[in-house]
Length: 584
Image 1 (cartoon, rainbow, N blue to C red):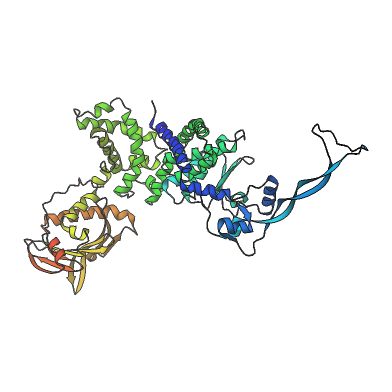
Image 2: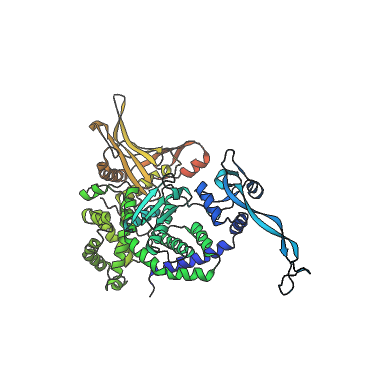
């Protein structure tokens, strides 16, 4: 039976074969070959002369050749590279005449008869050539270019190879290393047994190059294979490894392999077949380290302080952060749970969901401990944060019992959060500001309660306030600023102000109050419903509407389209919130 990893690796090798074939038929490849054909193939002696004078030389041609063949010109002040160019001259000499049998023909006196013979003599003269780096003009056709960009995957792979590789890895600039200054992206030094990578590369190319040189260090300690085979092996393994971890290097790797395969399909196929086991071994070694490093990337993305989370069970993390942290752990837990003999029974529709929850509750803690090293943050949170533990168990339950495998649906961290409940409660009367139509909404209660004001502050930030007047001053009672995550349908308390108590709190200066602000907002929104508040006024940039207590329009001014869109807004206070409202 083929496991998913082996199947994925096999597909990656097939992609290389097809990708190389596509390179050979591309217009870019044909243009590249035509360009190369115009460059002279220099002898070994001339090659040595060129490198002695200009160690970083790559493509060399004469002054006139650069102009005529490549539409480039030698820059002023460039120092010529001296090489030896052969030329031929005719010479004459007297040679003995011979008959058809090769015998010397003689005269009557016995003297050998001679005749004049012309022959060619090869001589050498010094000529000037220049490297492409000494020229300007039209760019030459290129088969490929450096891979651009960065990603969590590329950073995690770089760090993972650094951890598993048993030899020294150095990242240097082209100014610090002669080999790199010659255009190499990286190299494995057999004599020093170390890997050197160009530090100036973008992370995606850096990850590919590191995987390439790592492969060299494992497979090519001895030079018992031709260079073409070594390069095909290293680049193919780099592609397969990167592909496994979600990094696409095909636009570079396929061309690289093609230049060494030289259109020998059988040679390429056999070379790829020989290294498939190496690919499996390298991926198996890298995978657990990579997943751990990806978890750490996620922590950094959300600015999570690992030490703070480990030291207390009160650390505030948003529902989206908790969901993100749980993903790797949940996937591993599902693999273990699905291997349990009781798994199929748990999935049975004849089974009661309470039994499924009971099994998960009793067995999951021990399974989590297995992954303490692989997912340290998630495993720790499972034991110190009740909400996180419940969210993990609920996710596993949804997948086991209800067959919900869509990550956009099995989201208990988000769906069960107080932030989601607050969002739905606010939306029941504040949809006009959420949509961006309105900049201000006023709500009134049927009793003596103060008016409620909603102001759109921009950038998904809103102010929600009660105010009263004392000696001409407006007093907040209270005033909260809140932010909205409309994609995930969540609302977060940001600041709290209560003037009669001289109180002001904000999460930037004191993150620990975030939980309390969300809980207070939840109670406030419930009170708005219970006290039967109704929309009394809506204002936008170019319209305004005033309502009576029954929701009928009293007055409307401005943009008629916006008025028509918002005039039937009702404060549907009886609307039942769909959130489950788990208060953290």
